[in-house]
Image (cartoon, rainbow, N blue to C red; front, side, top):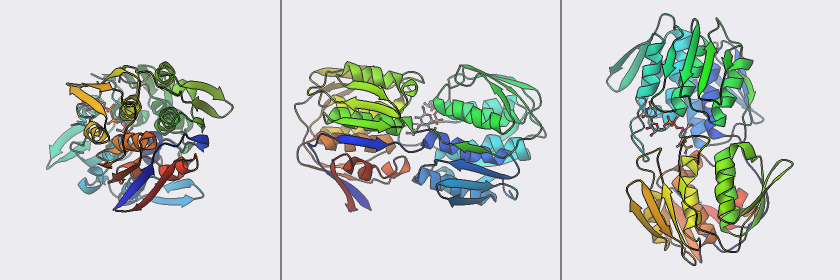
Length: 417
Ligand code: EPZ
């Protein structure tokens, strides 16, 4: 197994290029299944989760070739509609094949994803939506068996704005008969990109990015052709890296409109953030001010930035409160940050952080993707050496993060455990 070693205390400077968005590339790769032909998708990040998605597409019978950072996906010979447990358990976004397979072939057999480190993460809202479109859903030995002669448009109101649920229903409804209306839909930038890509394939979707999305079903779609948007969570992570080290970094690919909640909170903490031609420049303050945050669905403060922001608050000049409202168990990074000297008390779904003068490096363990990022950030600002183990969690969602940080001056490298 590998670990990442960081000798903290360096103020980062320079500029860093954000990769394509993992949470946009994943639904887009599966959207290729909706059309019969050769789809193309570029600016796909080189991540473990992407490799898992490609493996699943190949298991279904698609031919997937990577040529110069662009994936070509030939979906002419799909001969299976089953997403097996061993793949779904390693990457729950595999459930996003449900909508496309059901819409194109009238049948899908997808393993239930099971829980994960940050919460139970059921898919009941995905299934309720597909049933509303006329699918017959059965649960059988841990698998969802979904069948539908022909999906018919319907009005679907989500109990909560589920990102994956909105994505599955957008894809399924694109080939349903008649109009589908999604109410209380998720509004993330990744939803907007998926709708744009589907429309470029011939779908008729309006309202993506708002809480009400309308989809007029069409007979057929033409192959996918798109370029993945920059990863706003990777961008936010580098913005915090600049802030926590008192650095001056241009984050190329960061887009203000996708980061408003984070920009406002980082500014409140004392960072100076200025848009430039192709990104956002972040200058970290000498001393960070404590800031309270409460995660919520887009455009609120992203839950995927909560752990990283907590690392920042461990060295703020005062007490801050972080409330996690989206997932029920997303404080796994707390005990590892405490090993580095952080003063954090958990109170239900909130954490109270009393900022320390400085953190001390220590051997720590990654538990999930964004928790790993928060430990790297804490290590950048800590005295002495931090060693982060189990970094396979990190490699799911960050492309060569230690190389990108080293290029900004950080004293960081990867080595065998
Ligand atoms: C997506 O997960 C992201 N993953 C997550 O990013 C992100 O944290 C999450 O959206 C929220 O923004 C991908 O896009 C691949 P949800 P998803 O459905 O779709 C509950 C990362 O770090 N819920 O919006 O699974 C669920 O339990 C990952 O990159 C139901 O109860 O998120 C959770 O509490 C982590 N029933 C909440 O809604 C359902 O049917 C949000 O889930 C669906 C969801």
